[in-house]
Length: 156
Image 1: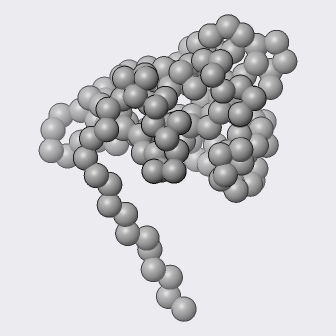
Image 2 (image 1 turned 180 degrees about the vertical axis):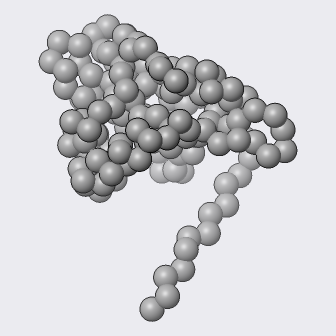
């Protein structure tokens, strides 16, 4: 599936490429994720081989600098027709927040999901991120259900 670049002046959203790995890692770091560039590279390689995943970057239209990143994963629904999309990451550099970068990234991820036959999109956001919650509400997302997590236990 091909997603054409989407612009929100002066931002351009496009599929991420391997050369973006270090700048993507920088965006993730600003949100507190310590994801090194080599791990981002591994993920980008895996995504390139998957029809169920996409990673998009928002770049400054003038400089080409990566301002934000969004990743989306599509999974089939078992109990109903169609699929569910999960926004698995959204990170916008602090200096680029409130400029439409997040909105442009989410809109592009949504276009990918709708084109893949998704019936809905979900995103999780930590309780410690009230500004993110307000952002998601402002773009039409509603709180729904609960999430339960069980981490893998590591044998000693």
